[in-house]
Length: 100
Image (cartoon, rainbow, N blue to C red):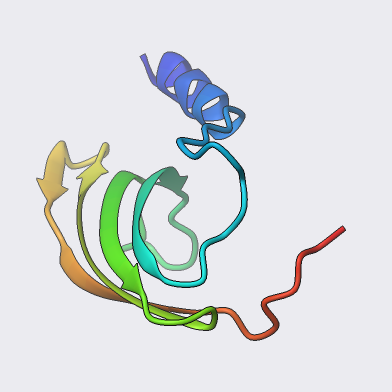
């Protein structure tokens, strides 16, 4: 089961989906982010691995700053337990230059 979930996550990370006609970053406006991942617990004996899914919905104030609200789920496989975080999201783009 764990092998299939890891394979599904690898396939998910390798797919690029764009819902816009052009792939340009707008100067201002609403945006949505969907994030799927797996975190390895490293360090002491209390660290543990978990799967995560996040959804963030926000507004880009200008080309450099954006604010948003998000929620998600964290599933701790070893404990068979899940938590649901709700959080604020602040993002910044220092240069606003496109990378080649």
